[in-house]
Image (cartoon, rainbow, N blue to C red):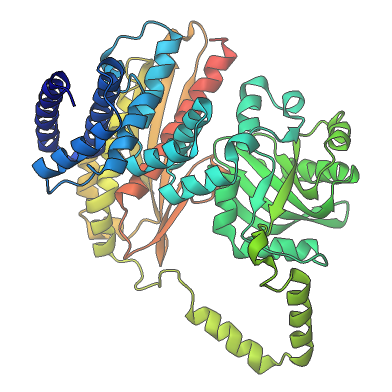
Length: 535
């Protein structure tokens, strides 16, 4: 290494040491952001020096050794991790500077948004993306999806390996012709093709009921594969019409689209008559399930195989929104171990033979059911509602939830002519948080209520000209004997979106979920109005 390079290196190392010391002193609330910042600066300096001074790859080995010697209590200065830092700086060349730069145009604004999203991801997520993703658009796609859905590193890896980037938005559908333009693009991005159910394995003789049962056994994984916003509403939901009964396979509700989603499972190839049957189900759902604030239901037909040309013809003149996709099950075994394991057919044959030898008796079934009850993983009911439990719940959770909601609503103060919040229960109304605090300290009052309501009202959008726009949202805190719950009036068919037992506190994560749902609903209503007035 030449003397000139040594001089630059010493200066650089001194600068990096000072930056690292400063980063360690910052608040713990911004640890991730500061870690990414210093990692980017290390990587960026390496890129600059390699380009300007011609430093070779061995400089990273020396830098790693010197930083670990200076900061022995800090992890992250291995050779491998510093190489990730260099790749990170190369992937986001403006990661630090862009945050301070003014927005000059739409392109700069888009870059800034990406940098801000990247700053929210833990370093382990970035390492995974740098390893697995080389396409820039795909990289940005997974960053946005991770932030939107709160994916862990393992979930992100699953989504990458299952090919979400290529699958999302590729569903055969008639959404552009059956859904308003302002929702059509979002709806297409909600669905994908194919769906990967490789956590189940079915034989060739399996029936649609077998597939349905398998999916219900792994409902959590099914919801993960479907994506954010899907809430499970039931299976084999019955509808009645003309003296006949009709049953749909799976019913979901999508919280962003505000639509019921009907999923029909088909064990074989797509057939055109599936569409006419789905049309019937969607008509029944719109008549019997659709709430005042809901949009029309959407149908999703999942088939083992799908002839795309036939599917497109089948949807051409259909008035109801329907999508058609394939599903994949039973991931293929590596070639080098296939011969060491029994085939699916052999396993099925052995199971069939064993089942024939077994005779199911009532006693055996009873013992099996009792065993399942003992193995239930859900939390056990410990006590019914009491004043002390409710008072503690309010003092450590509800009160902070209300305060944060008020702060969020105040953000719209300059946009509406009038905004107000109030609380009510039975025959009492409260206009400020101090009155609410006093109420929750009185056992005689609290013990006589079954629910406590928080109402938000935004009235008169200032920039709407002669148009009038009012937004009202009511959050209901419901008190049952063994659990408490929350639901939003005119949302999700009045179904609770959060239920907890009284020994379970209202956590920060729970509060954030409630806040996100309410504010998202407010924003949805505002966007609908802006669309109406052509803004």
